[in-house]
Structure formats: structure tokens, C-alpha cells
Image 1: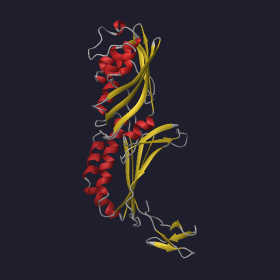
Image 2: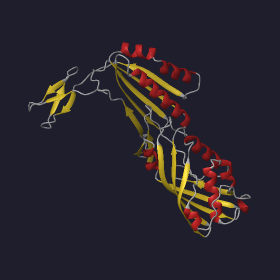
Image 3: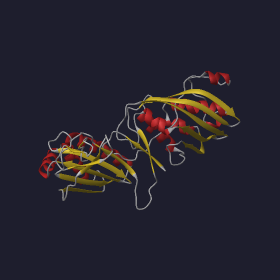
Image 4: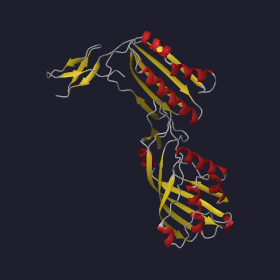
Length: 342
């Protein structure tokens, strides 16, 4: 099973979230533990940090300071960080990069600590991650500008050389839904199928298609997915107001994105695409080696158009709607209306 995120992007693609830990506000729970609450940094590096709870306090404060390098210095040489968004533990400079990515995505990021408990060398901190997504995080096509107030827990283990591990726990589904996204669960790929995501326009246009344009593009990285998603949304936003545009379907799986666009005629398709500045810019990026590694475009005309078959709302029977007709009568006397062909 894999979890994919769906955004408003017209070219949906797998979305990788950056996550992390959040900053520390003053909390009465720290006072109950006898830990001094101060805005001043603790003296010394990890080896001089003192009690596990003091190291944990310093760790959370460095997150609150948005200082990835200072967060990293609190870890032991082989110390690791992991949370549900990561494929595996991070260590060393990768932790600092992770902090920077999350702060870039949430410039006002803060962690409100709701409780801390200590068991020998292990500190458990309950927090709420709060912030507004006004910057990009890796794999996302655009900032959502949504706010989050996400509950979570860090389990921080401290050794003589500093933090040996941080394990973060939070609900990814809650996280993305608070930002205005959808978390979609799809099966793992299994030959001969690659599973993924899809999107379509819904303009209510019931014109019979006179042409179909079909395209696909292969990409190599999540950054390219993001670029393709943004550009595809711009292309479809422009094309949907063109005369002769009927509708569009896009899908992505593995590292390939597909589109099908229905048009009233081949001439309408060619004229609209030739006028589209976003489409021309995307093709220029590809031709200059800056977007994707392989692509295909094509224009198709119908070989045969079958009837639409709809279900009668009154009796449940079927009605055949001829190509070009707005509706068809049912045997019960009801009427079944045509719907969009794509």
C-alpha cells in the first residue's frame, strides 16, 4: 500500500512531504519537571548538555529557532531522526537540510509543547505543530496557504554524546487534510500495472468529440513532477476557455504523466494549442532539456462513435442516447439526459 497526495494541480503526481519537529513555546510542564525555561541557549555542545530533559528542551528550542545546524549539533555522531513522511532515518547534515525544507514550507513554523515525560534516557514530548504553508516543500506543486494545528509526539533518546535518536509520530492524513489536500491510498504497483492518480475537468460540456489530443511525458525527479504539475494546470486553465475545448483527463503513474483532451474538431485543437503560451513555454523547456526526458504528442479523430447508455432515474432501465442527441426516452416514459463525453 502507498499513500499519494492529491492537489489542485492538473497533473497530479506523487507528492513527498517534508515533516519534522516543531518549536517550543514556554510550557508549565517543563516547570513541573524542574527544567529551567529560558530564551538563552544551553552552554556547551551535546556532551555538556546535561540531563536528557535538558537536551530535549534544547533540541525543541533549536527547532523553534529555525536553526537546522544547531539542531544537528545536538545529535551524537551516529544519531538519527525519522518520522512517518520519511523512507528511512536521517543523520548528520541531512537533518539540517530537513529542518531547512520544513521551515521554507512553513516560515512561521512553531511547536507548542503540551507535555513532557522522562523515563531514564528517553524523553517523550507531546506537541502541536502550527504554521501556514506559504512556501514550497519537496514534491509539492505549489503552496496551499493552508494552516495546520497538528498534534504529534517526539520520542527523544539521549546518550553520553548527545541525541542518539528522535522518532516522530503524527497522522499524515490529518496533516495533509489540514492543508487542503487529499490523502489517497492506492495499491502498490504489481505487473503489469502501475497505480497512480487522475484528475479531470467538469465543465458540463456535452458536445460530441470530433478530435482527441493524447500526450505523455516521462520525468526523473520529484522536482520535475512539481514543475510538470504547475505547467499542466496553467495549460489546462488557458485551454479550457478556448472555443472547441470539451474536456480533459490527466493521470500519473510511476514517473509518467498522461493527458487526453477532447475537442470539437481537429482544427479547433490545433488552433487552440498554437495560441497557448503556457503550452509553448512547456514545450520549449522540454526541447531545451530542462523538463522531462521523453515525451509524445498526438491528435486523433474518431473511428466510430457509439451511443451513450444511461440509467433511468425513475425505473432503473437503460436508454441509448444517439451521438449528438441531448437525451433519449426510457420505456417507462422517463427521459435520460446526455452527459459529458469525457
